[in-house]
Amino acid sequence: MSLRVRFAPSPTGNLHVGGARTALFNWLVARQSGGQFILRIDDTDRERSSQEFLESILAAMKWLGLDWDEGPYFQSQRAELYRRDAERLLAEDKAYLCYCLPEELARQREAALKAGRPAVYDGRCRDLTRQDRERLEAGGRQPVVRLKVSRAGETVVRDLIRGGVVFNNEVLDDFIIVKSNGMPAYNFACVVDDALMGITHVIRAEEHLSNTPRQLALYRALGYAEPYFAHVPMILAPDRSKLSKRHGATSVEEYRDQGYLPQALTNYLALLGWSPGTEEEIIPQEELVKRFSLERVSLNPSIYDLGKLTWMNGHYLVTVDLEEITSRALPFFQRQGLVSQNPSPKEVDYLRQVVGLVRDRVKTLVEVVDAATYFFTDDWDYEEKGAGKYFTSEAAELLAQAGERLAGVEPFTAEAAEAAYRQLAEELGVKTPVLFHPTRLALTGRTMGPGLFGIMAVLGREKCLERLSRAAVWIRNAAE
View (cartoon, rainbow, N blue to C red):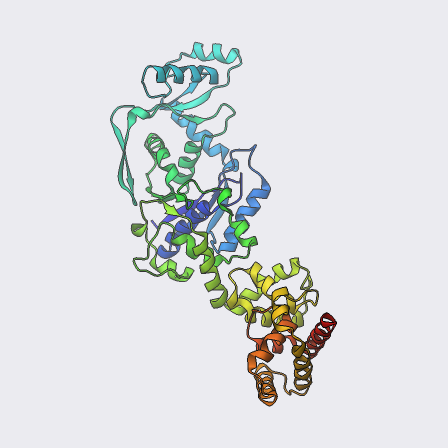
């Protein structure tokens, strides 16, 4: 039987980095082994689940490149399967109806704690007679279904990452498998689905480890084959607290909107808990598929480092194919009104040239836009500090002469413009920075940026001459 793994998010929120890493680990294991990656939606919480969150989760997974082989399946559409197995457990006397009210359960827990006993359900409804049940139902009580669990001995979870994890069965109780509204409890639905879907490996977050003894009890009661388990370590904030919004963006959607690339995020998430066994940090997705293994997943929590993710993103901005970076950058330029909503091929080609020029100086797509604004609009001011330093009275004349020289450059390329500028500086007897610095400021409003002559080539002759002339006028007016 081939390996089958699953990812089962709940559509009660966006896909956060912890869930994205779990999905990634499952996807990598499936792709490496030639197995199947199944997507299942845990939407039994009808009040909190929403179509908006579902669409957000699906979009985030597609953006990350985590394609699934089956699904999405929806637990809300599988009620008959849960009902059938619950009835079978009741018929086999492996489960029973419980009519205890919440306030009664609270009193039981309080009494157990005062007596120094584990605060578990005491099983008082285990041996109700048919008459007892009829009387309670006549009083309007809606029962839950509880699994009969032996509290003797211990349960050993065979974990592919942690080895044998031992749980004392005294901490278990006859837990609820079907709620009073007829909906399956998490552990029950999870086991039924995993078993019927033929899931061979359950790879999930460490926080689910405590659920595993109960799930094993269900597998055994139902007679289903038990899967392998692997519980991956927690992701902590830099202060070792639980990662939350106060530490910055936590959802995949937020990182996408902040201009991060999926290649960077998947690379970074893979290294949160897994080690390639070397000092490498840049490992593209196709390489991760070849090298990932659960054996190299750590037991220790991982510390989330936004700085490292941002550094990785800068690397991928430079190394990913320019066509793809341009395509991903386009919506960011459109949101700023710098590129039309239906750009012509000419606009896209211009954008491609601009992105190619600035991408090695920034870390995110948002920064790409900021670094490139002056290519699309004249609505900007000269940097005050730069103007004070480079826009001297002599600079006005230099810019005017530079404009005259550029007007005759043919063809108007970066190489030809540079040659003309260097010749002009030599003729004027000035060092090249004396000419270059005011020119950069005149063309971009900034003192830093890509290569000056690359900027000229992309802006084109007409725009360069216009801006050089504007700067010369600005300098003369400022001197008056």
